[in-house]
Image (cartoon, rainbow, N blue to C red; front, side, top):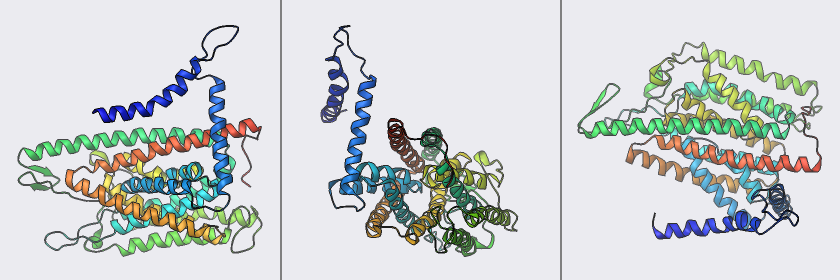
Length: 462
């Protein structure tokens, strides 16, 4: 560490040291004549109250209209950085966007959620456009893409169903329970993801070491002179007749799944009765349409599972993985994403890595699923009379540009260093930051409810 970096760290740490260590030691109890604890109840209470007051002032300053101000510009810069990191892992980044927009820009939580849907859509469009490009090898033959459409087909119906279930649970569960569940799952996922990243890094290091010794065998291909052949083979199955072309049939099935759920959302509206058809809020018609999503998801998943299209599932060490695990993982990820209000893309990514999907395939496939889920949310906000659409589109464009930049940089780094594990580490970074920001945000809300004497138990869904 050089002198400049050392001075920089000291300058950053000194104010924190003075505030938390020097100040408390100057205060004594008059009748005991001894030091107060460094972190006593009064210090914590004061810190939380000041944070809540700062947040309240920001919300009052912004109001219901996003103004061009220093907090807004700072939030845009933070969202640009967050989107560029999230794009590498193919995840939406909603776990970063919502805290940034609420804490930095001072937006209301509902407005921040609507903005986040548009921002995730912008980033996912860049990911999908990048991953759906057709590439050819040296002989002119079309290479197989990174997106595993079989995983997407098996996962998307149950993920959309899970999001609807999670949204209902979000209304029922108390804030403190949601915060605890979020913290536990994100911490577990972060450790698992980082562990997978370390494993991939070691494997890559071993391959690079072997390649330097002369030649390396990758699958059935032998590379000469230490050159590594990158076989970008999806985890699941052979594409059959579609190997030599773009899988239009599977993409159309995904669009059909999206359109079917979108029609239900469009007719049903939300729990306040806002929809294209007048309907009693949370009445019989509302719940009938909501429950219709269950057989719809089951039918689509069963059709895909029992279709004649061959699907070979290979997990870690090329062991067989049951096809049912993908819809079950998608259902759990979608439900948790709906509960936490961040979508399911960030939550299913570590699960796919855990069952052995390669990092590049995980990122590309998750980006396609995030595209379908985020566009559905964005369309719903538009049809239900969302305000500040122009500002949301500006932030969406910022995330689009940031995602393109992040993808280009990461792909060049992977090509240069042969480290696909960089994708796994980017996912881990986003999840770790989301765990810290969203948990802190939830703790502040829980504390505010506790101090105000608000009801903190389970609620009715409507």
